Length: 213
Ligand code: SIN
Ligand code: FE2
Image (cartoon, rainbow, N blue to C red):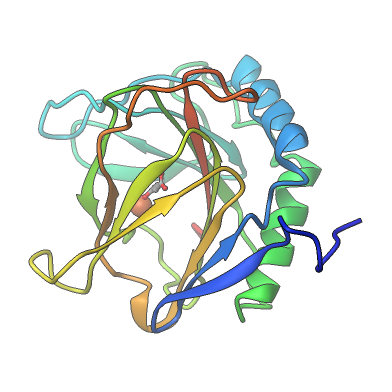
């Protein structure tokens, strides 16, 4: 049971209009979430995607859900199949659905119904450059992001690439939800510091839930 009076009880930190950080929200489920990550990656292995510009991303990615995010020579797309295996992406594990549902409720997006979950894996030095999540047709649906393992610095800006950036540390079990006015805000991850986490070894994992149809 979640004990709201315990020292490690979750708390909420507003980030921007429409965006909030639910600190420690996924801690209790973290081990089950990691088991889900490993299960998904047995069917759909982590890989380093190549951007349309020919740059190999330092973050390793895979997906689960009806649709998965990927790259090709022409751009970024959601597709029902994993181009590496030719198979459909594995289904979103129950424990993923459950944490995503509770987080989107807590953040004020009770109608969120994700059909895609991108799983990112960061090793020491891995970064994710500033970008917008804009490949989804329905921008009324938020993004829900769950962080596991090593901490990372998340940058959260505004609608323009050059807008001032907030820098917040995301730690094990933290969940960020952004939608509404901040749905298209630029964001990214600074290069990961080396470290060791008992659940994830030398890695940080991030799950981002999206509505891609
Ligand atoms: C993303 O923007 O897709 C992931 C952000 C993160 O790793 O926290
Ligand atoms: Fe993103």
